[in-house]
Length: 332
Ligand SMILES: Cc1cc2nc3c(=O)[nH]c(=O)nc-3n(C[C@H](O)[C@H](O)[C@H](O)COP(=O)(O)OP(=O)(O)OC[C@H]3O[C@@H](n4cnc5c(N)ncnc54)[C@H](O)[C@@H]3O)c2cc1C
Image (cartoon, rainbow, N blue to C red; front, top):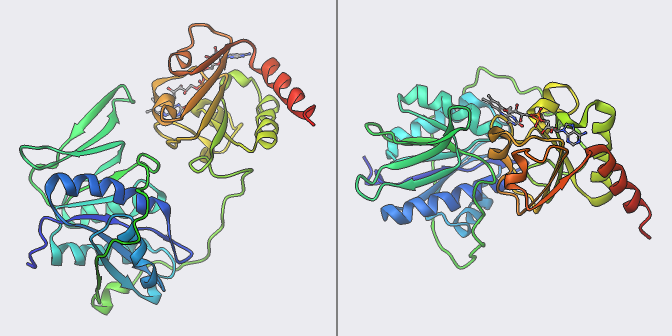
């Protein structure tokens, strides 16, 4: 035991030797929790050639950074990360560990929870601390998105969860913050992996990934067919947006899964979200209600999407889309 038992930990993510922004979102969540518990906030930074980046995590809210810098961590290999995290947890006994619900977080955390025998709440949209028990309250949609469930891990530490990317704004960087940088040297056998890294193939899509886009043009089953759906790309191209989709549109093969917005897709918080021919099922709304302005086009005046829309346009999605594209093309 090292006297660090009440710490709140966040799992930083590294891509191409850079700290991925989700790491800083996690610190914004972590700061909220650690302030409520009057506990230190620490981030775990694992990678190769990343030590010099640790200060960024301090500037984003961490009081401490535990750093493991090794060539074996050059590329993401789940089993090594799980070995190292297990070792850190057994050594330092944190109270809470949060990771992002990214592909990496969703891969590492379930394996880790099984390894150390702790619970895991996936895909949280809100985190807080119970003022009486000081336990973590992990809030996430449940029963197909129809209720928001508050989940507590009563008997085990660390209390572990993943939180949806973009569910919290990054704190403004404070370069005057000072913190503790702790370099950890785990035993060599923990770096052994059963996995061979073959390479990384990025997905090719037009525009930014939906989670980073400021303008999202989404389509649903009301777009009728793939040809009509492709017009959304044209509009997105004209106004610098990215195409999103309902699950129906993805299931019909009109858009890739990476474009799916909603409970079983991605949560997005763009400045503008346009929904063409999307009914507004709770599972879809769960992923886009954080948009600043929602514009919905639907021919059904009773469509549930209109209940969350800032601007509701009742009409035929294709006619309105064609009209928009034409008038934008005529702009000087
Ligand atoms: C566990 C679970 C997870 C799920 N996760 C997701 C998720 O992540 N994302 C998601 O989107 N869904 C998700 N769903 C599915 C969700 O319940 C809905 O089935 C889905 O969102 C409906 O997609 P849609 O709005 O495209 O289709 P529909 O519900 O069929 O709606 C089509 C809409 O288009 C309108 N329309 C038709 N023709 C026109 C026209 N010419 N002009 C204008 N409007 C028109 C109709 O009025 C209708 O409102 C999930 C469901 C479950 C059970």
